[in-house]
Image 1: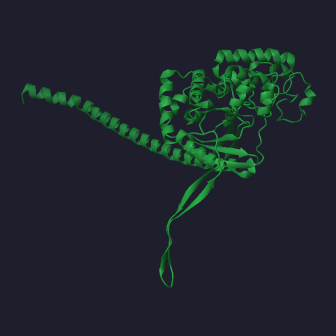
Image 2: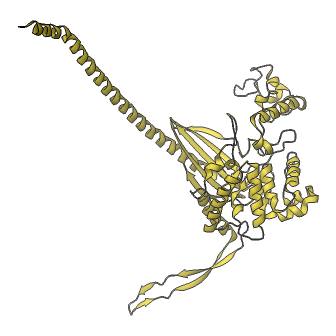
Image 3: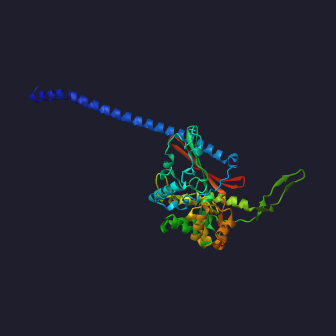
Length: 438
């Protein structure tokens, strides 16, 4: 054997352990990769299965809670009452306040409430005797005497204050949100006042006598909410496309329509007889027409014809506040604005139909804090110098809300289900308009 052959054999003998080690490492890397891939797939499948189970739980809880909220036994006693707030900031202009301005408002209110005795989050006086707030043995009482001797001073801070809405809870809630559990899901029920929002259907009014005022009303609302011309134009085009499908009305009168009865064939012993088509007259009440419009526009306004993303774009967003045009838009075919519960920009949009909108809105805001208006005549008497302008707006305003939405949200694990129902209340009669699940 030559010297060169011996050299190659010696090199192979020396490198054999290294080759074995390299092959082993490659096999371990391949096995680790396969194990990691398999583990990821198994984990992903478990997450998908868990999400499906969580969503089913959330969906079931949401549907059950909505049925509960819509039950007549629950809503028969539903009679929201507007409260008096003479020594509190009004909710009307919060939508335009930045977070800094909002905190400054609360700080100023905290200082003033320390002297006046008002301003606690529950509406009670800061200077009232401790004994007036309940038994010290009640461990659930936030005013328990055993909690702190300096509780009254704590309530003077801005962090303990909240600007109450017309019914007590923050606008636009009618009642405090209710939270409870159904199985593994946490459910929240919120009821909002739709008559406190700007009826988006006003932009579709077909009456030529008020079309200019309707356009000005929409522009007023958009300007207050910071929607400039570039955003307003697409919104206007979308509303026009909806108006081509169906026109919007604020007043209805009973009408008579022709109903065609199709021909029927009757078999007799003597011969087969065919009845002719008959035309009968049917009276459709104003209430039935209103209900039909409510249902139709509830579907149209929540369809792809209207891009709500632009309206939902936040104008102010913090941990505790989120303002957007959608929050103040009536998307369920409401026709009237409640002067006792609507914020400033909605009031000005409503009184655009009669004139002196900004002055009337300011007068309403100052008066209703002390005493809500009982009816439109009370409004005219209180604002006597603007009675003519108010008279022109009578069919667009009210003093009692009849239009509400019920929002149900259920969360189970990482899954979330929601549903919104619109209802009208006339006395003790509750009528469901539509339910949309998300």
